[in-house]
Length: 423
Image 1: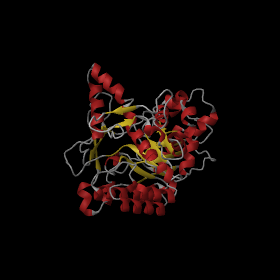
Image 2: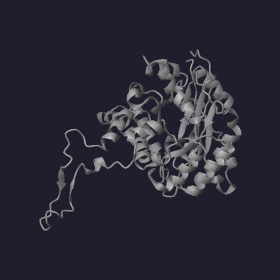
Image 3: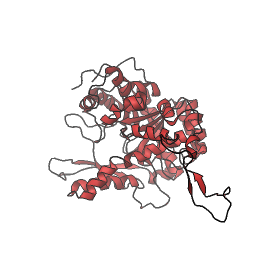
Image 4: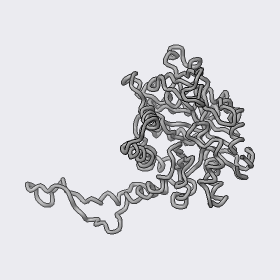
């Protein structure tokens, strides 16, 4: 695909179907995530899938997906040797690895359940994937429902040799909370970059075991739209959901990390947001900075509020200057400068993110093929990259397609491992 080092910032490990049934403490095994595989004698649609996986876990019980099949190639199965085979096929030298369906159970409001799954997952990574660390960097799952336990698991994973940590998109507390400082301190002390992957967290086990997870509700809405005739409101909703609202969650994480002073207090820690797209980043960076300066033409002495006739003019507590806050940014760097120094947003097929690279900064956007998911670019990454990076010089391609992330997670980018000429 190229003669420079390519890193996928979004690759998934297909877990063994009985991973947690065999590894969780015995008293939790009846609540362990597991997958049921089944094959239909006749496909649902002629020529369609006959092999399926059914997920069994709280909030997602019964969630069924077709098994990953790659036209013209072998079906991905999660074995590291076969993942490397597929990386070579796609022209990828190294990958940052994430759970697959385990994402849905690693971060719930039941701490014992989540931590048991996380420890089993992290142990499995060490046993099966760590020997391939020159090409694969699996992320250790760290539930945040108990901070001392989270710190202890970071310390344990660092001792075992894992090189990155995975935190939930939807945390128990906002990421600006000072309660997380021991987590940031532990990750920084061990040189472990932090990753946030879409569709993680927010699973409420304790509230209602029958409640369907929000992630599944969104997916089902899209699926049902695809099955029926589109109406104007469906088209409008889908258009909004694929644009503005899709950026709300990663923007909230970035604002919390920067506005909460996390980046200032932990300047050596890198934060990576995975599978959120990145085309929205350029406008968000501008609005963050604009929020903390008085804009051209804005009256810094503009008062408004509710006047209280019973009080003297110099004692009006419900009156104030609208733009007084703009000059009170509490940190030495601008929000965009912290982002450019420490935050990286992954995309797969997002030409706007590439076009905006000179405004956002080259290191703020990183690429990944979302292997082996159907919404990713695996087996078509060369075509996707040619489209997204049309006219982009090779030195700039090298930064976005692998250079930045290789530095963040510690891959040796001086040695290319995947074939250059990938069809």
